[in-house]
Image (cartoon, rainbow, N blue to C red):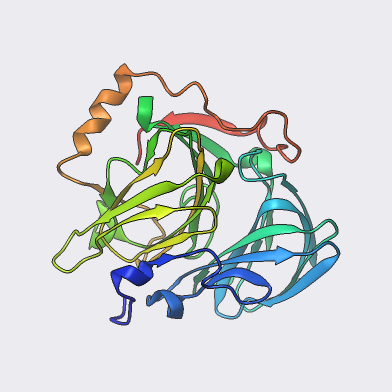
Length: 310
């Protein structure tokens, strides 16, 4: 990473503060002060469309609310999407670098564009919702759901790694705190990370990053829907969902390593918490697929598994 990253106060991007029509959020590597990871939130009015040049980056179009049609490289992908991030797992589309794409929506909606600067040009592809692995991670008050739509071991990209995390109200996520800011072969990879939040029913959530090195990232932020936290380094976690308010966040990551891999180190003071998980049940509110909400087409067919990764 370069030395132009913003100070810690600039690492919390409030809803609307990084808007650029038609994007409600536009965070590129230059804005973040790093080399690769990017996120845009595209808002389309009914019947509207948006032309996108992918340039030197690969992108995934992920519906947050609504359906859309994606045209790229002579392919047409009809994304059914979902009613909202708590309604179910969604399908998605992969856009290669050096391509022209068009995204249109008859009824309108909100769509995440998760991106990363990359080298290889992979083919455009459709990601069906039923093929997204859904993982129930942790247990007790550390229970959360991870939709691994573009995890390193589930969907091929050149650099991009992206997942969704849903945390029931009152639970802690991204715990134990962990980091991926140091290259240690087979143990830890270097990844720039973006957290984009949505909180149910207007509530706040909280996110903590503590320094892993002198002068490193140190913040405790209240987050609300549309807020974003940039994590260039440090122990990140917990992400805290306040009681009565489920928390959603989209993680977007990319790094310089020869291998596209997500390898983390637990905080030495907190890693022991994993040993308690086998003795506790998973929160019965999981998975959070909503109550028959429209757009939850991927829920029943998703591959469910429980793992103890952070």
